[in-house]
Image (cartoon, rainbow, N blue to C red; front, side):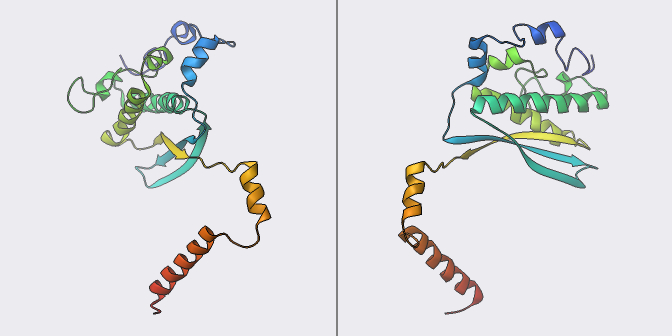
Length: 191
């Protein structure tokens, strides 16, 4: 079968099974995973056209957990790869090997229930394998979504208050300024 209809988009009954306007708290907890407020769980979107003659890259969304970001990336990349498979007239399963390199497990388009059975590391591997398929098949145009964790340094009120109260730069800022001046003078050739 081609990557259309039921193959790329699971049937309405399986897609909506257990999913409605008011999902169960246990399902939401399974989707959410462990919240980590020390990391910005960001996703980026890379769009290209005309065999990469033109492209854009942008931040897409920020999530409260790695799992939320990975589920989003998995869903969006699955949609993009389904579009490619349909336009190429091929099955989703034919895009990946059953053993060796370029294996995808599970080898099927995004299905929430199947993805929820994966751990975060396995889900990240699934997302990476789907992204790599775009390069292997030299897809002429499309969009890729990637998970990009970034440490988040949040300034709390007490820390900001200390900064606002001091006069002049602190030792760390002065040291940074001195290093920058030395670097610039070295680049300019001053002794």
